[in-house]
Length: 68
Image (cartoon, rainbow, N blue to C red):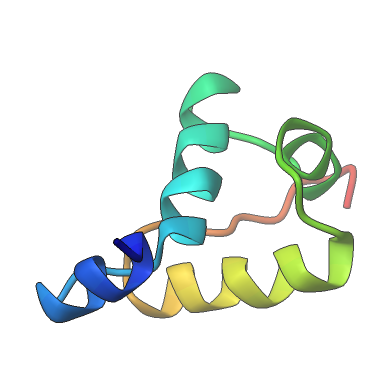
């Protein structure tokens, strides 16, 4: 069984989205990109792309800080 195919067939996002969302949850609900990269298996460029897609779907919100 292919998990991503099953998720897609049911209209759900890919498993990688859940990995990122779980990483954010494990970091207390907020995370800087470098923290999320350390908490997941994704490289920075791949993570940035996925973060933009999650934000586009309304699943996360990116915020700037004075430290950015």
